[in-house]
Figure (tube, rainbow, N blue to C red):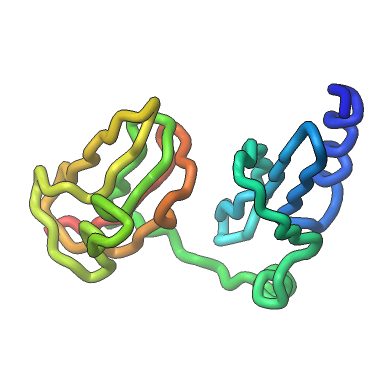
Length: 163
């Protein structure tokens, strides 16, 4: 597969309703997925993400699951802005983790009390695990990322209701 064919495939997937696409042949293994993000008013938006797939898994997903279809078809409810909540944002680009290891419990859960300086999550960047600590005392209101999800600079990670 040459560069132009790859670019054409990415453009085609981008315009389609697919959320995830995996392809594997003799010389390439490719995984394309659209990450869900929530914009103004809680409207689901998608952001393209291209990841190399180094595993030899034959699994292929060509359409969204029925759960994703139902969520996309239902009209989102208007969400009032949380003016009294403090948003903890990502200081770097990387992969967000909610626990110290896959077997460990999460650092925090929604409803947990947190204190300033307490580790909330980890962002892995360039094989370095960076602890993200709370900068306020309060209660976890909402966890905005999923474990193992790529995070962007300044992306909201967690909402905290300050004490």
